[in-house]
Structure formats: structure tokens, C-alpha cells
Image 1 (cartoon, rainbow, N blue to C red):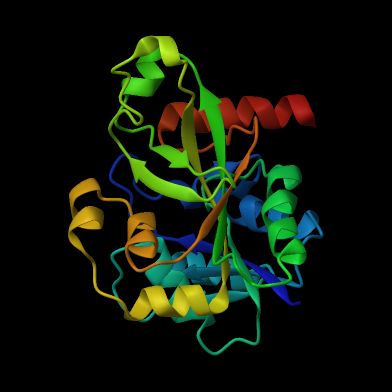
Image 2: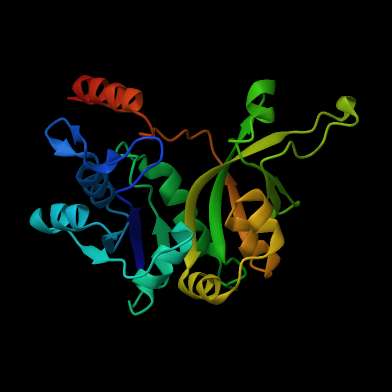
Length: 245
């Protein structure tokens, strides 16, 4: 089974333009992320996919694998699907370009799902973690997921799910963490399928997979990614890098 990591990398960012090209301890954020993915030794290959000449040149100059995205895309899945369409690969893991401090353990967990899925019942695998703070639960930026008894996703929402009509039941709230592993065919199917009302309403691409019958296996973890979304996050990352070195 051939497994690759793909890092979608857009230059533009609403909250922090050009964040992937910012300096982080003498290297750009995107280069550090690429190198961190390679250093996990979990993948047969790692690719950056970008529509930016600057990012393309940055990875290529340092000897990395980079694919130029040709079309404009609505989602990360679309961008990845275009990139891997003609690659000989079985499983594709989506690594976030703004998370240079990659933790190998959660990535290994989503990969292991497919190694154990001999009947090929899983189309995607992703992560979730329990949240208990009411502010976190009610925050629409924290995407929640509900699962069945076998931990396959039933629905994702920015709303509070399940709704606590009876607070004595003790429902658990699970936040979706956007680490994905895909079967190649699931990605290609996504690429050819139209957006439906649920995805359009919630602005969550994973709902397209569910609406068209794809099965998403969720794995519970305590992992919390360290992303760089603001200049303040970059300063924290620089301090963290100094501590680690």
C-alpha cells in the first residue's frame, strides 16, 4: 500500500497574508512543515501542492516535491484531488501547511485505519477530541461531529450537536480535527461530485462525502494541532522553536 502526504499551500490568507512564507527560525513556515512531514518517516513521498510561484520555488529550491495547482479550487480536497489524479498511490494524507510542529502519532493512527481495513469499508479517516468547555462547545469555529457505535461519522456541524435538551443524559461533545487520510478513489469521486445544500450551508467540505455515501472513520485523540493563523501565532511558534532547539 503506497501512502503519501500532500500539503495544500495557498499564498493568500484572509487573516494572515503570506503566512506560509514567513520566517520561522531561518526557514519559511511551509518549508519547516514539509521537512517535518518527511521526518515522520510515515510516507512513501511528501508533496506540496500550490498555485503560488513563490511557494513552488521555495520547495523546489530546497529539493522538495512540489506540484503546481492549475485550477482555482473551492476546497482543499479539490486541490489535492487534482494533484494526485495521475499519481500511483493508494492512501493520501492531508497535512496542514501552517502546522510546522507535526506530531507523528495522530498521523500514524489515521494511516493504521487503512492497514486494518481489509474489506475496504473506510473511505476516509479523521480525528476528533472530546471538548467539555461550554464556550468551546458553542463556538461555531469549532466543528463538532457525532458518530455511530463503530465511530463512523454521522454528521458534522458548526452548531451544538447533539443538542442538550436533556442535560442529565451526559452527552459527549467531540470536536473534529482537520487531519484527513483518504483512499485515492474517494478523493477523485469528491472532485467530480457537485456541492450540495448541507456543505453549502455549513461550509464544511466533509459533508459532501457524507451526502454521497462515503464512510468516514473517526479516531479519538487528545492531539491539538499548533497552527499559525495570525502574527501572534507566528511569534509563539518562534518561541517554541527556540525552546526545542
